[in-house]
Length: 115
Image (cartoon, rainbow, N blue to C red; front, side):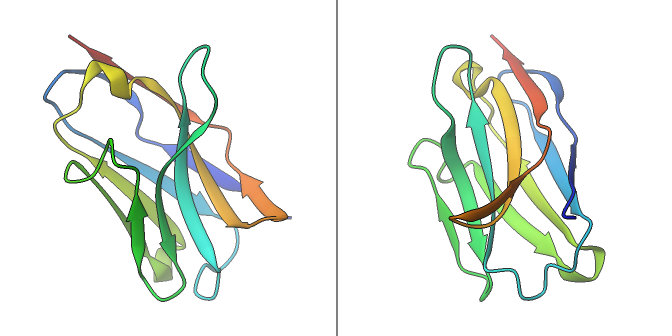
């Protein structure tokens, strides 16, 4: 069974940085895609960033230039480095593994950015 464990969330002031980690219980070497999504109160879950098997990355327009997704294959871990955080980045951030219809989700980690 695939398990994803996120960590690294917390409270930070606007302009600050956080790094989220997502540790997978399976090897991620040949996983088609992993990603980060977020869901703010009252809003739908939205894509933040993805990284595919070849290493290519994709970002939501709202985070381009501020967030960086990366992976450490030997550690089966994906990261999301978040810089220049804004209050509108406040949300629960979820790690994902796989592509539809086979997608696994972590439990989420709260990120709160104060103004």
